[in-house]
Image 1 (cartoon, rainbow, N blue to C red):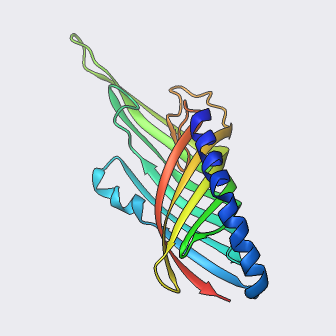
Image 2: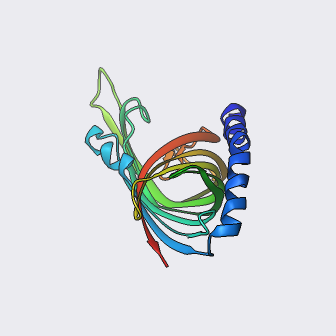
Length: 217
């Protein structure tokens, strides 16, 4: 997954001169300001009819001088991937949290770009049924349940936002996740982690769409 990470940094570095020039102007004309932001990931709402997953995620944060973002995220995920178990069913569900920082600025009027780092943790459980089929005997059903699971990871994020008016922003967030700590010594193995993704992928790209409301303090 080196290529997505290289793309994130090359994009940010290419636009860095625009961010620096914008900061020089702001340092002369703008007064220090702080805003409180709350955002909803509407992309996850759009995927609800698929039946593959049920997710909700909200973001709250503080933005300082339209440059530094202090971000906190809270979400819930219920995943039921069809391919997790060939003969049977699988479900993973739980709550996840992320916290981090991002720094950027206005690259063109009303368009913002920021690069950041986040730390994530998930508290969840998984459960399911394995069906062992037989042509002679009745099918054997094996139920399993792994409660109290915890996983941690970090993310490199690239945030793009468009200011619609004084209060409303539409944006997207590209993430590159790297699993830090999860001991998958279970039978069967845990397939997916809410907030992160599949356990057998140590690096996972992800994309979010959000609408944000800003309150200037």
